[in-house]
Amino acid sequence: MLNMLLYIIGRNPTLFLKNTHKKAIITGQVENIRKYLNIVKIYVIPMRIGNGRQNKILEAKASGLPVVATSTALEEIIAAPGKEIIIADTPEEFAANGIKLLSNAIKRTFISRNARRYVERYHNWKINLESMDHIFKQFVTR
Image (cartoon, rainbow, N blue to C red; front, side):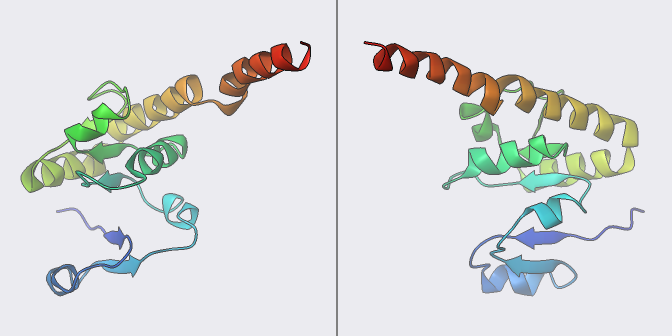
């Protein structure tokens, strides 16, 4: 059996959440998520709707964490399921995929590396801003 610690991070955790996850660390909203991204092994985002979901996923992937998210995440992020992100849509799928990643360091590392490469390739500030810089320079020289 895996020995693990669950962090539940997010604004306004419900009383139900607090009462049903007594062994979890429920932080509520945090100033800086990086502290937690540096200590966890996987990042689970079961959100189906909500603001900032794409940024949360990209931040975790940029930190080199394997992400388990709902299939609706693929509406916002083009990523290869099973290679750059793990998809789960039910509590059972989240649990099973989380356990698989936590108990399989090779799979976890595979997803982590691909997730980081994905962000470097498709969400790189330098590359994305170079094209904007080119457009701005055209307007300035006119």
